[in-house]
Image (cartoon, rainbow, N blue to C red):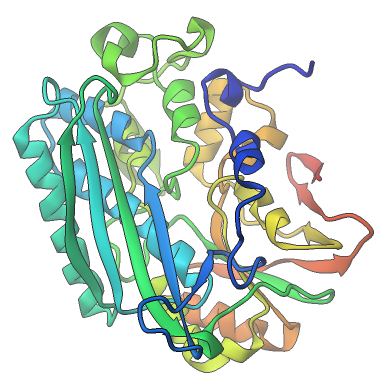
Amino acid sequence: MAELSKYDKRGVSATKSEVHAAIKDLDKGLYPSAFCKILPDVAGMDPAYCNIMHADTAGTKTSLAYMYWKETGDLSVWKGIAQDAIIMNLDDMACVGCLDQIILSSTIGRNKNIITGEVIQAVIQGTTILLDELRQLGIHIHLAGGETADVGDVVRTIDVGYTAFARMKRNELIINNIKAGDVIVAWSSSGQATYESAYNSGMGSNGLTSARHDLLSNYHIKAYPDSFDSNTPREVVYTGSKKLTDTVEVDGKTFTVGQLILSPTRTYLPPLSKLLATHRAHIHGLIHCTGGGQTKVIKFVDGKRIVKDNLFPVPPLFQLIQSESGTGWKEMYQVFNMGHRMEVYLPEAHAQAAIDVAQSFGIEARIVGYAEDASESSVYLKTPHGVFEYH
């Protein structure tokens, strides 16, 4: 049996192989290669339309927010958690061309003995604030309510999730059909977009289990025993040297470790809306590099080798995680986005438009690679830290 990675030992999986095995026989919807499942228009029974329903959570980022809130008293982290869970839905849906007029419902489960009413209020208020911010950017999300349950027997701290629903025209869908010769325009996950209020470390909402345990010290084991699964082998629990309130300098500015890891998940909806308004017909694929990091695309290609040989420099947070943990770079690129979280696949003649749109919102963009025909689908990464291939 192959040796388990740290990520596996911590009870999580970058590939979600068991989940994919469990759902392999389920209906894949109208367009199996779409980034999200596309359903018939059961809401309107119009063959020209389709329905999209998507669900996601902030994952174990809520455990980190719990610790930071207890350590500092800063309730603002919970607005970020609401954003994490919402954007993980919205940006996935954007990858099939669904960008507006979306209905959202929340599902929040908490341990009432630990998570107070003011935290629930902060999450809900954070949701409202975010939707107002998106509305000012021309993106209309409608909150339908939701369920908040006290489930301390099954949730250690708090779980924050959302379900999103939309109805759209089928002829406006983007169905992944990545072609040999397409280039990959990547949009950076770090920096500060024009619509963000602070520097974004690029963390997103994937890999938080590793980020938390690799960076933070064993001080957190005794201080916050509710922040991790007691069944996890102790040799992979809080193995770093940092405390949440330790400071790190990035680009001449000082942040706490907690602030960096808790950077809210960046949404790409504003630049995607602008790009699709003019270039929808030229886009052969949109990939949100979430679970699986830089290997995410392999699920959406058949007989293609995806070559990425001009990646962004690794952002400081991911460098810090790697130096603290000693995790191999091949695993790092599979767990974390490592610098970009949105990929646009299109002919090279239209690549500059995708770059210009991102840059108009203060987001770095570049061609990071290309697609080519192959007998077996794979992802090939040429990085400053080695050459890695994933099948």
